[in-house]
Picture 1 (cartoon, rainbow over the protein chains, first blue to last red):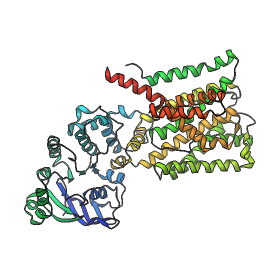
Picture 2 (picture 1 turned 45 degrees about the horizontal axis):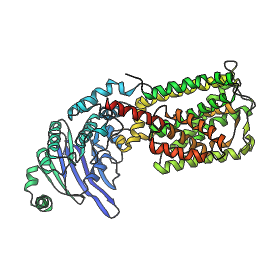
Picture 3 (picture 1 turned 90 degrees about the vertical axis):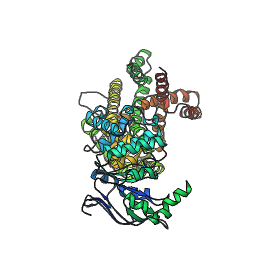
Length: 252
Length: 318
């Protein structure tokens, strides 16, 4: 497809004898939210780590913005416009919310071999950081040390930090993980606001959220893509119903 | 806003250090001057270690090696009758930068326990190199024929001049650390300490920043070494021994890791206790050890951290 921002071709990753990613191919179109769903252990987080560069792939190609980025380290991929969030909240506990996001802004504002001026006073960092906090609804929590924020707020902060790097592609690893119904609802509306302006690869267990947000869904089982299509197509797919959605329904 | 307790502690500490020469001359106990110089030199060393250990999370168990390298360059220069401080000192600092770059480049490939072990191993290597340098005194060390010569600008053999020079340099180092920590660079090394994976994910190539911090800390420790050589007019391999690195770690922990002035307080308390306790018993570590354990257990964040915590809990109440 011509306007695919991200193309994954025959990606593989094994841990010992376990194939976590099994000849996976998928493409994410510009401006769309592409959800990847699948049961636990399907290799979803492994896929995110491979895309972000935190894990090396055994074989296959990752093409981003018409460039092969398969061999690039995480910072280099970040500079090209890939931002990820973490399933297990990964933030700087010693800093305030604003400082967390300002650091993400700083990462994309030239080199940081600047030894003298107080970074916390720089409007150039703080203003975009504050804007990102506003986008996720944390504006009034900016000056609180993040260890004192709630779990839901941590998840919002994750998104703000990713947004602050001005990414072309957002890799969201279970943004609703561990959230209550009300917090999830809030997160869905935050993500909904990003729709159109941002290209998103979304991993999520919350099926209501996935079907509310996604333009395209890929179902992953044991590292393999068993089907990919629009939400309606996925909902109607017999294989998916038995392999995954049915199971979920039965479990509930 | 009231000044923080840390600021108050810093002011009191430097005020006390400033009057030591007067006390020494009034009481006619020149030893106080000697003690004060040693304290401040080690405070510079501890300050530099805190940059990488407290703020950067890089626990170097070989930091004294840079003190030793700085001192040895002065010693070796003097041995070859190169006594001009304007040449000696930059040479010593440059040597420390080069060694810190090499050692840092190697050890920063690892993390955690491996980092500790590699820094320890590299430092011990230099210690044994010092022992084997027969030309420069080997195990016995090398006495300096004279102190660094600054062509009449300042006479370091005059003991209170040296005292005030060290005093000013300590203040300067503290100021540099303060600026560094709060700069963009400082935010990067603190972020990498807090969560390195996230730093890389948001786009920071952390290695080069950590290596730079390691070199800065090495150079600052080298300055302590230069001063130590001029203070004792003697250098020996023992300056680089791993127990000296351990002393620096203890000073940082004692005063408060990751607080700006903590290492200064730590170094002062360490030397004072060492003096006081070794007057009571030869086995002064028997008393010092349990004291250190108590500080680590009950005043996490060290002596200064203890003060700050009490202050912030009072602020929360108010």
